[in-house]
Image 1: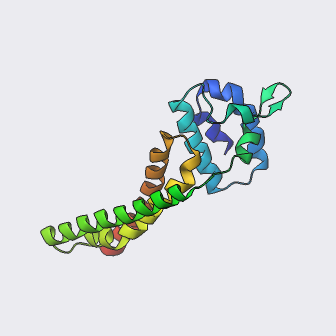
Image 2: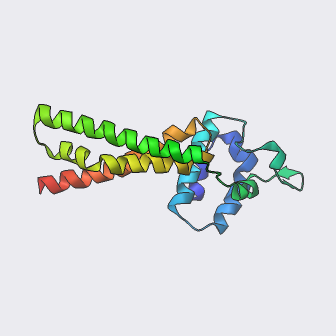
Image 3: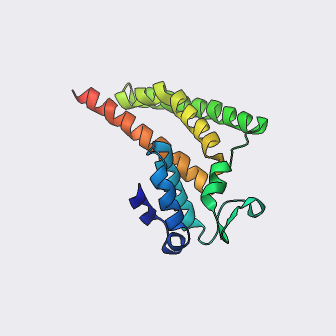
Length: 168
């Protein structure tokens, strides 16, 4: 995991690299930590020189801001509006993907990839709405990229399995 620190901009590495490396030594390896490192690196490149934390709640440790301690305490406050948006996303995406799948099925006939689209539209919608809530704590420009990245990885693995199954 420490090698992922190289994905961050050089200025960021100089300022926070040592602190993050120490944190990663104590942190168990997990997909969540890996994902946080990747989206954090993307955010660091998109917003050089800024840290997505509230200035008034930063802790001072020997004259330095400890972003790791702040990030560990940073909780995601989900509201009723967030839940309604996530539900709307799920319903809307399910309806759109199902309509596209039905259109493709009527236009081109039955095909395994069209069937995958029809049968997984609700799974895809659930992933997107879940990611919307999961990545709420990330800055706005990073959220769509994180959601699309996560869903693209999942869907590419899923489609690869389908294609392999169809060919055998």
